[in-house]
Length: 184
Image 1 (cartoon, rainbow, N blue to C red):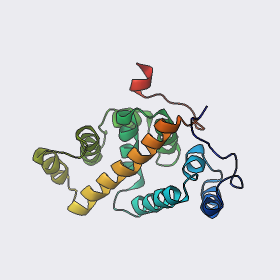
Image 2 (tube, rainbow, N blue to C red; image 1 turned 120 degrees about the vertical axis):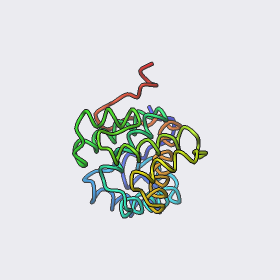
Image 3 (cartoon, rainbow, N blue to C red; image 1 turned 90 degrees about the vertical axis):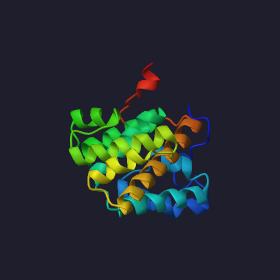
């Protein structure tokens, strides 16, 4: 059971969040627990949706976005986000099980994507204090400065949702996948 209130419906959410949640329902066909949880703060929901829209419009393709989300969730030990992004990775980004496993381990079976995922994992591990060699490696794989900033944006967005879900202990409403931390 969640430690923070998750409104049971759009209508039971704060009035200022209801239109945004309606848009989520229209887009996704439902409103996952994460969105209703974040909707407790209309400002946080607005920020989350804004950053989600920004990353969707970034230079990173959907597969790379999901790869980064998987490695960040694993690094941060967030079962909710790992479950959600495993589902999205398989069903939306069309990642296979081998790729999802590689992503959870901070890599990829695609050479260019591996550089992005390794860099994202290092950003998480180092809390942003990456070494010059980390930047050189992601640049050597063909990532321009704008794309590197997009990778950091993806890390930040996913870290936000990881932390919110861990603070709340959000009930998982996707097929459950446990991080290595949770399994230990």
